[in-house]
Image 1 (cartoon, rainbow, N blue to C red):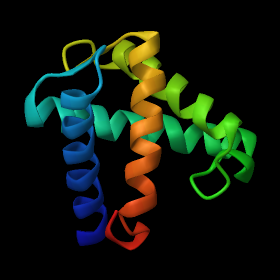
Image 2 (cartoon, helix red, strand yellow):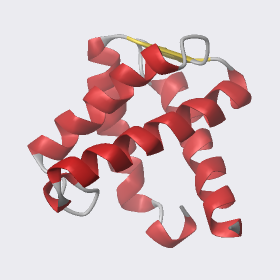
Image 3 (cartoon, helix red, strand yellow):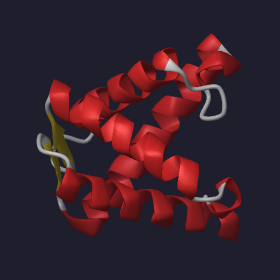
Length: 109
C-alpha cells in the first residue's frame, strides 16, 4: 500500500516536471497531477492487459512510445480540468517520461 502511494506521488511529480519542460502540456497543480497520474496509470494498465507485454515499460520501443503518447493525450478527456495536452505535447511528454523512467528505479514507483 505504501509502495502504491509512493508510486503515485513520484508519478505526479514527474508529470509536473514534464509539464514545465514540454510545450503543449499543462497540468493544473499537484492535485491535478495526482489525478492525471492515476488516470494515466489506469489507462496504461488497461492497454497492457489488452495488448500484452509488448508495450510495457520494459519492452517499450516505438509501439510503447506511441502507446504512452496516446494514453497521455486521451487522459485529458477523462479529467478535463486536470491536464491539457496537444498531440505534439503528448509525444514529447512520452519521450521525456520514458527518459525519466530509465533513471528512476522501478521499485520506487
